[in-house]
Image (tube, rainbow, N blue to C red; front, side, top):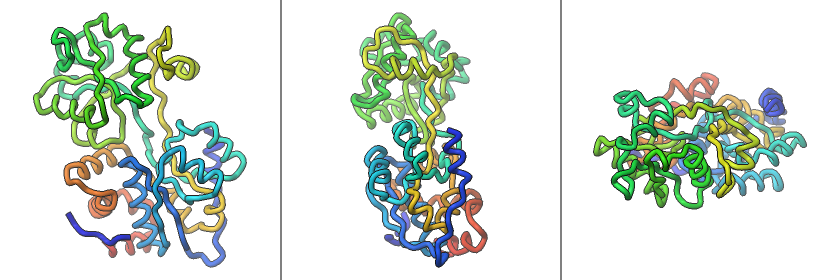
Length: 332
């Protein structure tokens, strides 16, 4: 591994709003939240390298997580940038902060949004004609891993995650137990990932909850199953996400909007960085593959950012003017 230098409609209006030009036209100091999940940490380092090498900014990364980072930006005006903010987690206060002019949305960093749902290995889906969750539930024999060998395994999220409650309710709404399935507690994120890796290594079926972008979906080809129902927001808020909801119904996951958020004060004084942040976005497919490479090589966020810049110039050069792209390329 190389050694690298240390180093809604309202939202649409904000996306289009021009940033005020800094008096001296220079980038200056930028603070960026390095969130504590892989895709966001990778994005923070890509931003750091491009802003430093391409625009001459002085970039400081600060540790972040969705709610505390948003709260700090909203109340204290720092850090300047949250590269990967999952909007659904802070939607109401974020909408208020945008409406009141404290925070701006720079870009939709994940062009296809965050994706959640029930998945099976693609090879299994093709071999057995499985496209929907009901197709999968018709064949419990294809999904080993339950404590009761006579049942199919339906893998849930780790304890404490919101998706654990959601999956429990969806499992009951599907009457999956009566169809021969057992809801399996994965125990931890590593346990969930390990169950998928084990299934692929044994060429066995796997069924359960997962999301993107993630290293697992970059390493293993999985198919997201069609639930055959739309997203019902009211039922989602009043039942799907509520533990032990008495009468859950099957409910499609909402698309998770994932944006880059910046403080208004930063946007006003730093047009140079804003020009870049308004254009910077990538697909889940790219991020999945980058995270898979990082996992296979025990790479840091910094390593992953340099790997991306060295191997995917066709993506990042589209975000930059030619002279800026040339400076970044020269620094690699």
